[in-house]
Image 1 (cartoon, one colour):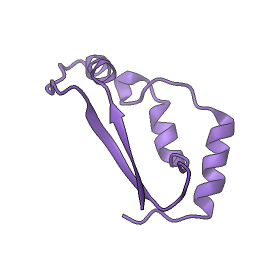
Image 2 (tube, helix red, strand yellow):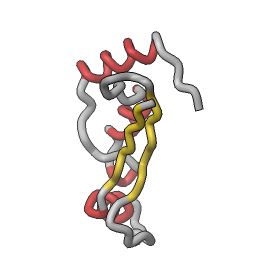
Image 3 (cartoon, helix red, strand yellow):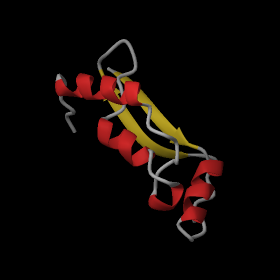
Length: 86
């Protein structure tokens, strides 16, 4: 399989914790957010629910980045035809 690991860097981790009113307890140089196992020769789209959560403001646990409607629709179309096996 082809695994993809998604990392979160301290600057964003600190900003997320600060937005929630708490200090980041972890001083690692990075944090693992997700490991996406897959058997495709290209990166699969992020799951739609994850895209929606990421669009939330930092104080609500998101990244504060706006939702790209085209990428969101591509993700919906992809995940309608595929299953995520955990």
